[in-house]
Structures are given as C-alpha cells and as structure tokens.
Image (cartoon, rainbow, N blue to C red; front, side):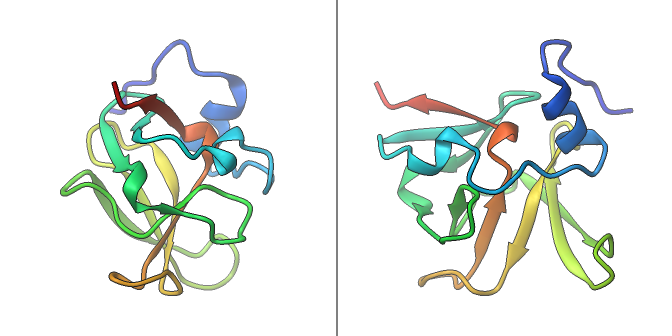
Length: 123
C-alpha cells in the first residue's frame, strides 16, 4: 500500500498517483540553477543532484542520471506506445519517463514532473 503525504496538492496527487502529467513549461524548477538536491514531494527521499540537471527543451525538469537505487521502472502504454516510466522506490509515486535522447555520459533523459519534486539548496 502506498502511503500518500496528506499535504500533497490535488495536482501532485493526480500526477504522482493517478497517471496525470503537469502541463509542460509550468514548473518553476525548469529555471532552477542553484546547487542542491531534488527530493520526492511525497516521501522526501533524495532523488537527483543538481549536477545532473540540464535543459532538455522538453518543458519539464530533466536529469541525465538519478541517485543510485532510488527508482523502479515499468513499461507504460498510456499513449499507445511503450515508454519507460519511473517511480520512487520508497513510496511508489510516479515521477516521469526515461528517454534515450539525453546528454553524455549516460545518454538518458529523466523527464520529471516538477510537482513531484522538492528542491533543497546546498547549505
């Protein structure tokens, strides 16, 4: 059973637990440039370092790698074709999809819904 944070907004619940997606270009995290870490908005586990963030032009915060062992994946056919969905290993919240068009060194693009993330600036 997935434990949902009672402080999540309706949009966060929709995206993280009901197969929703935030509109592209709407997340303030798209323009976030400070050093720090990105955490799951539901359980607060650390997911990404700001060092792995890049501007993909997709309209969603994008990263070329996650921190180790924080996500599980499954195949998603919601748009009529196979995509690799990733979700928080700790709380099962959906975060986005992994594409094979990212920069080196991984070639991956973790395309993350911004509402699913909380940024914490490095102290």
